[in-house]
Length: 312
Image (cartoon, rainbow, N blue to C red; front, top):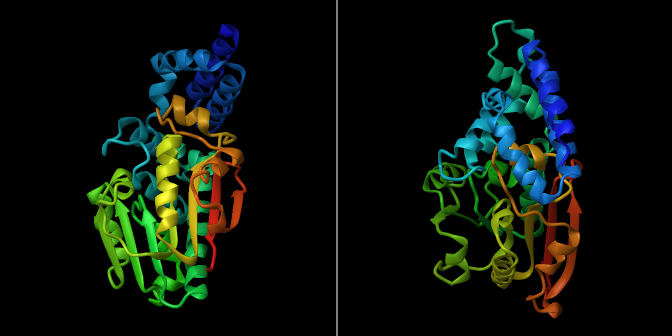
């Protein structure tokens, strides 16, 4: 633990805030937290976080809407669907708040965090990837059955030609959050079904479900222990039709945004690299797996593992 690094870090960020250099202050905070986390042991890092939160700069950055919502957890968890909607809404902004002298500090911080944070950019890329996967499934299978686990608001369907053209046979969306399901239901009301259930409910066969051509889970694995993650993977794989695909998504430990998420947002996840994702397949019958594709998106933050079930 280097107190000189911390002192210089706090002073640098605070100086830029006092000078009204909000973008530079946020960038210094974002990069500085990452540097400290890399240099510190796990124990030193966890001891540093309370010192950060006791400093005046921590309150300044909680004006930013994403950071504040994650920290306050109005729905009981940090990464709720409203958080994602705030990230998606950034793409709809017509101009920078820096062009408006009357903009609030929160607007400046929101704009800059959306622009610079690797995880936020990766989440938008994840939505585009999922939208493409749904369309590919519709092209591969006539009237396919699709399942989304921990579906949130299902915003990935908003860009899908398959959803627009109603070429999906059945779309099942599962989530514990009833408010999220109410929004998701609107996206798939012509051919969908929403179910309020947990991962444990699925594993214990408490949710009667058909088989599917494509199953994906975009956020829940980030919170699952290896034991539960393996059991869920096994269960979801069993629910695939021959030739079906299972797409598992997890945050990657190489993400540059982890330090900001932990220190500022109080948002803690379980991260997995390529080898750790592969380990989730240990309980699957090897002869039933035709192909496994593991990749990380361009922002090096989210890892994807797609498993294809054998055709036989």
